[in-house]
Image (tube, rainbow, N blue to C red):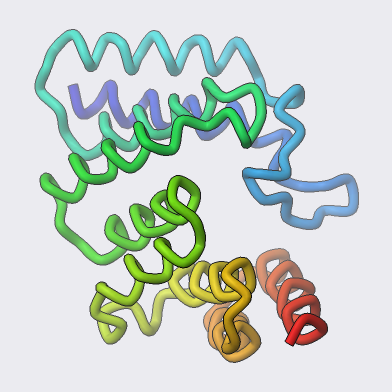
Length: 184
């Protein structure tokens, strides 16, 4: 089942690839992607694989991650995303694999479900020393600080930029940082 779960995750990830970058090559966040560009045939294939996993009733980390991707793929718009189901799936994933990256992803989902302040509270409950060298932690923190109207986002973006090894991500973060500076 885990091999099928991994395949489902890869298929669902590939289905969203055409919408992940703008024509100029810049990064497009999941919430801003044109979902009409997602490959519906691959999404259908991914859903079928996830259902096959569910029928086996032997959940593992790849299967749960595939289920999370399937929930995202089910939403016609970002606003239609079933964040309560995603949080529940991250809870299940964290029970199987209690690591800080899973907890970070759960905190981001909590922010979508309950608001940026709740997401920041979930981030604050994590051990920052275990995530200090992880660029997405700082990027998520910066985004939630901006969305919550709290200070400190530019410094969090600075750390995320410092840790970024991908030029496209770096440019995206630099634009987000400039917007955060303008708000403070």
